[in-house]
Length: 242
Image (tube, rainbow, N blue to C red; front, side, top):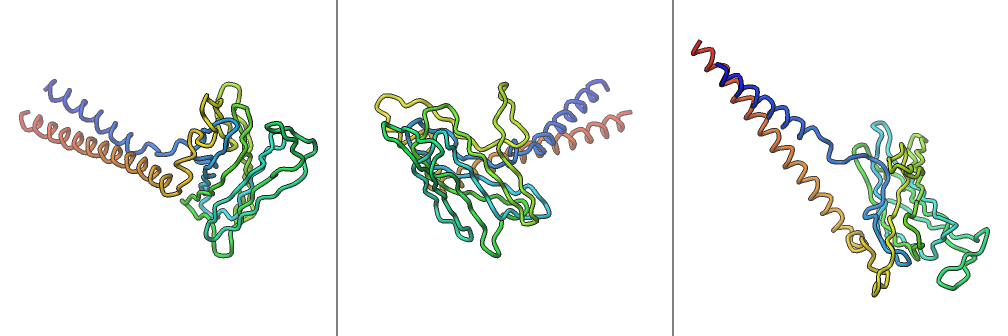
């Protein structure tokens, strides 16, 4: 009898573990982010602003990115996206900045994507907005505060920097991690420019991660189902013996 009870308990634990694996979210948090997010100082960055829709009663219709003025970007290019109008605004700096020995008096200040009529990021959907930025500043992190506007007028401001303890804030700003340039590195390759340069590669990588998570979830469910089945069988056999 004790052996049967031990077996039932063990299988029950496996069943719970399987359910837990299945119920684990595939995305740690849903917020506007840069994908990929690691590049080289002094180089260029080609990546996507990944924007998930977090509301179940409204779609996203506008994305506004504020570009830094203390370390201005002199080059901004957007990739055409069907159903969305992109606008990169350029203006004079309050104070001239010297970059690579050249005095810069004007630079890009913002990028805005506006949905055309009939277009939006719907419920349980996300969209990727591709850009190429340069020249990247010589600092560890480049914050890119972003405002997400919903069709009902709600605006979510993703502009908070991580705390000194590294803990993620409630509304984190998309950020690029910038590594120091190595000898022989021209800065154009960066650490993640290749995947985002081709939208298909990024989507395939995302799809691969989702499939892996589904396989793990399916395996966990299978283990849980087997555990429950064996547990019930053990209980019935012990009752028959009794």
